[in-house]
Amino acid sequence: MRMMSWMAAVTSVVLVAAGGWAEDEKVALDKLPKAVVDAIKAKFPKAELKEAEKEKEDGKAKYEVTIKDGDIKIDVDVTEDGTITGYEKAVALKDVPKVVSDAIAAKHPKGTAKTAEVVYTV
Image (tube, rainbow, N blue to C red):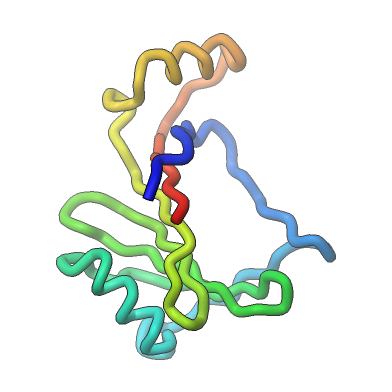
């Protein structure tokens, strides 16, 4: 697994599916496919599942499951068959590399970063 990029959440980002807006559907944790839960528990054995959403991407079901691993919030993207395709891990603003903070400040001089996360792809 490699770290793909650092992102500061300055504004909300909405993902658009090829045919229009992606519609997320809340899913009760006890209704998640076993493969999804097993994959998350294998990757993050001490984590607590908090909430989940389901969306269709290219006609296939995909889940975004929010977990807490200690004090850290993580959003895990998982396919219906239990393949983790990536995850976003919240980090403290003080832990964002200075080069990233400087680049964001230069691009958005009047903005204020409130949260940051590291995005991992698998």
